[in-house]
Each structure stands twice: as C-alpha cells, then as structure tokens.
Amino acid sequence: MGGEGGAHGGARGQAGEGIYLSTAVEEVTLVPTASGERWAELVPQLGLNALARELALQAECLSIDDQASPQRWCFRVERESLRQPALQDKLQAALSAHLNTPVQLDIEPGRATDSPALRDTMAARARQRRAETIILEDPEVQQLLAQFKTARILPGSIKPL
Image 1: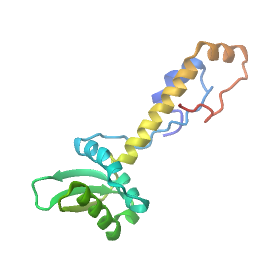
Image 2 (image 1 turned 90 degrees about the vertical axis):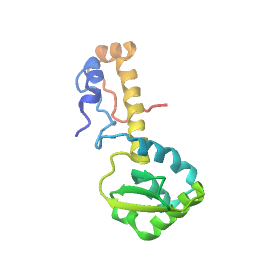
Image 3 (image 1 turned 90 degrees about the horizontal axis):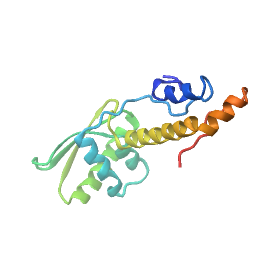
Image 4 (image 1 turned 45 degrees about the vertical axis):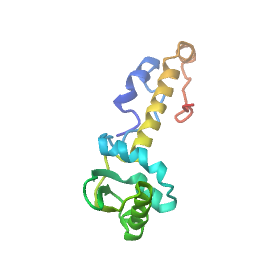
C-alpha cells in the first residue's frame, strides 16, 4: 500500500487533501497470539546479541509445549539466513539457560505475523499516526494551512515523542 492508506486518511482530509503524506505505512498485519505475547516478553530477557538476537526478534512463536521433555518451542522465520543451525543453537542455548530446563527449537520457513520485531514496528507506526493526527487536527495548524494556500507539511517532518 502507498502512504495515503485509509488508516490516517480522515486526519488528512480534515486538514486538506494532499497536505501531508504519512510515513506510517502498513505492510504486514500483526495477528497477536498468546504465544507471541509470551515470546515478545521473553526475548529481551535472553541477553542475545548480533544475529541470534535478530533471529529471536524476527521469529514468530507458533507453539510452546511445556509438558514435553525437552520443552518444544516452534517458530516461523522468513529469512533463510536467520534459520541457520548455528543461530538456532545459540537461541536454543540462551532459552534453555533462561528457563533452566532443556529446550528443543523447531524453526519453519514462512512469513511471521506475530514477532517481537513486528510488534515493535506496529507500535512505532501507531505512535507515528497519533502524532500526525494531533498535528493535522490542531486548530492552529488548520488555520495556518487555510490562511496560506500553498503551505504544506513536509512528509517525515512529524515525529512522535
């Protein structure tokens, strides 16, 4: 989708069509799951770095079998470069150490719809849309845009705090 998607079209319309092209573009829809929530809370505690951290951030936790011995954690990861056995071993070791129990990881290829990285991206985009809406709906901004017909808000110039 382009930057003129419907999620923020109302705010643009109120300030004048074409006044601001949003930078909060949506590409993937987050589909939150209980396993994804648990994984997103756990990842920062694992102390991973470099590519092992990137694997954890990009991984969608599909299932957790706490009753299995060793525990089985199933993930979906899109990028082949992150599905390498050495990275999987590092993530498995970190997760085992953190949980203080043996863990077996199963990683399948595919596009994640609930990963820590996707959750972070969607939260950042939501903050961006809120910041844009606040500015575009501000009466003083609307007055200035109405007063100066050629005035525009530069794309990317609105940043959330």
